[in-house]
Length: 359
Image (cartoon, helix red, strand yellow):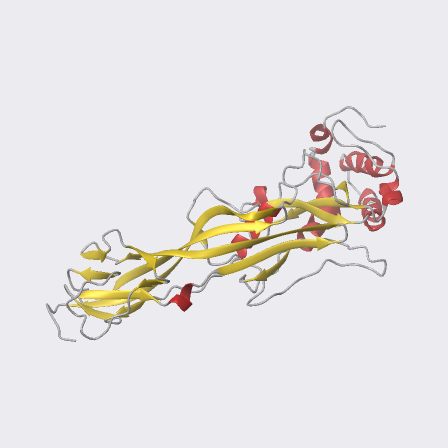
């Protein structure tokens, strides 16, 4: 019978935390380690055996995402926005979970000098074997093996790209059962959702570089308008997808990035940007306008006028391309806005002390 006590009281002891780190969390963190892909699609499936029961549910990435599983090159314009540092996701079917957890418990309980950790491990064993639970968390009989194939035990997954250790390891509750087709119990606020998958796709998104074409190129003149532009091919719409797909459970989300504007920072206060705020919008499918012969006396729609020379050095011209980000996914057909993303590139510009030039 479940015991009426707080799950936090039962499971917050240091001994149990140490025991769990050895039993489950390290394994699940590896199982959920995101994998990247380049152009096209790449997946890393969960493990399984001949019964078809998956050993772990892994986030699968496809589209414009990093190849090595690291963070992409998109920075959120909202400094307060962060991808999930951890989450709960399907881990093991009942029989597989019993096999692993019971073996790990036995090994840990036979560890010399375990001390108070042995008591905590005993409660974990009772929780899964003898229907021992607490206020909002029921216990299980024999690891729920009579429901094998009808659901999975879920467990915490660390986001390996989260630098804050405490945040990364905060999904530390004991693995819990979820029936196929049912949501996780409401107390598990970090249970994986399509919106969280969209945020993970955003975190791994790899957008095209932002090298601005200039005229004059690399070396310009004082008081001479420098034209700047990006060809349409440099900023087509980009998509990245993250999904979890195991028997009885499927969630996916696609994050879409659409180019919005280019912002120029000349690298010196002694310069004038065109437009004055330095933000060049998309017009007719392109940003800025390529320079052409005969336009030397015209004002470019996107560009810079340097007011002094770089004195034998260079000015670091920073070009920031802003992308509008949105997502769609399971249960969400209409696009939902996310914080804008930016990517930056710096180009060294030499400015010579010449008042005019024919070109």
